[in-house]
Image (cartoon, rainbow, N blue to C red; front, side, top):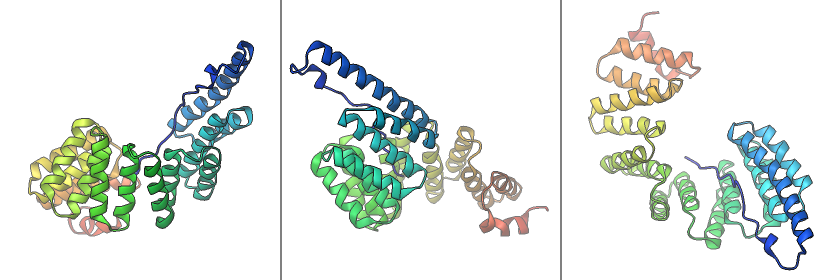
Length: 288
C-alpha cells in the first residue's frame, strides 16, 4: 500500500531575522498568514477528497504568496491532488515545479518517485527514492515506499530490507507491518505474516485491510474460525466493502455453507463488484 505524503505546514523562521524592522516583520507575517490560509483551506478540501477544489485553493496560495517556502508547499500539494485524480503527467509537472524552488526537499523527491512508480517508470522512481534517502536517511516512509517499488520489481529481499528499515525508524506505522506481512506471505512464512498483521491491528484496531489480510493468512494456517472472525470484524467496520463479503463468501463455501456463500457473493455484486470469477458458484449452488 502506498502512503501519500501531504505536507501540511512548515515552520517559517525568517520572521525572526534582525534585518527586518518591526513594520516589515508585521507585513511579512501578515502575508505569510494570508497565503497559509489558502493552503489550509486546500488541505481541508484534500482531506475530504475534494481534490479539484483543493487545487483551486493551492493555486490561490501560489498567486498570493511571496514566500518561496509556501509556494513550494502549495506546488507539492497540487501535485499530490493531481496524482489522486490519476492525472499523472500534471502531478509530475508540479512536483518538478516544487523541486525547482526547493531542490533539497526529500519528501517531494519521494512523492515524485511514488508518482513515477504508478506510471511504471521504475528506473527514475528508484533514482528519486535513493536521492531522497541521501538527503535525509531518517524518514521512515521513504524506505517504506521504496520497499513497495522493490516489491513491484520482484526484488522481495530488497523490499524486506527497506520495510525493516522503515520499522526501525518508526515502529508505530500500521502500514509498514501490513506491507511486511505481504513479503512474508510471498516467502510462505505465514506465522510471521500473521504476527505482523497482529501488530498492525494492535496499532489501529479499525484498520480493515489488516483484518482482511489476516483472515486470508489464518485460512492458510487452517484457522478457519479465526479467519471468519476477521472477516466478520472487517464487515462490521466497513459494511460497504465488497472485498470483505467476497472473501467471507469464499470461506463459507470452503466450510460447506453454500447458502451463506451465495448471500455474501450476491451482496458483493449489489455493491458494484465484478463477480464474474464467482459466477460458477452462483450457477452451481445458488437459487436464481
